[in-house]
Length: 269
Image 1 (cartoon, rainbow, N blue to C red):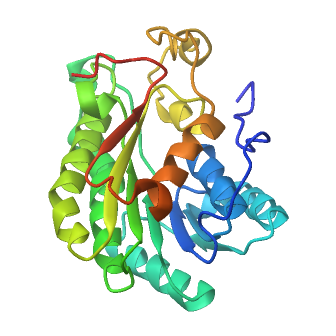
Image 2 (tube, rainbow, N blue to C red):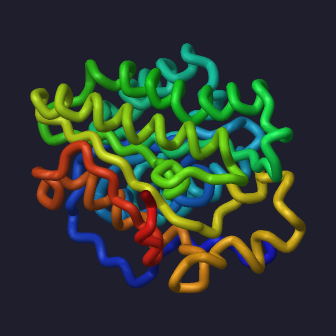
């Protein structure tokens, strides 16, 4: 990207809220996932990140920053569209890091459409396999390891709250994530496990480059054109919401909720 996303959050001060915890973050090689990995490490958690093999260089960079914070970082490359890999990612985290307390299902596929004629089944299916089915498989794989005080967090989108005429399959998949989380939250709460969602507004991440049908100047000029702050969020501005939801001392009574971090975009109906 012409301007690299900010993820280090230099003004954020950790206080040990996640000391001794182990987190699995999908899409942790870049963007919001990387920023969350950094703050989790600053709060005392060891981190495993899942990413596509072709993103190895980015993943190595994330690991370096997590280790600078004094925590361990396990790299788990693979394709979350494969249910077996979802199980393998959880197994590797438990085996190599010694357990699992926090699942952040953050990896996503985004593809834009300028018109309904651009919508096709293959892209629709891939959006749901990446954004919804992988989340489903990861939740089931994590269940035997999660205990009272642990947390599941999904990254949705404000598009999943209001719909989108340019990201139809993406918006639908994000809405599915929100409703699935709300549906399982009460069951998990009986086990003492909290399940919640973060719904970011426009955010400066490489995910947006996946929208190959966006106009050439869309990212620079129009990504946040409807945002009251007139700019996109930086990943480091999203990450504290994930700390809140992962930390039992902060969010012990927050269950099945969607935290919209949208820069003032309140019309998400």
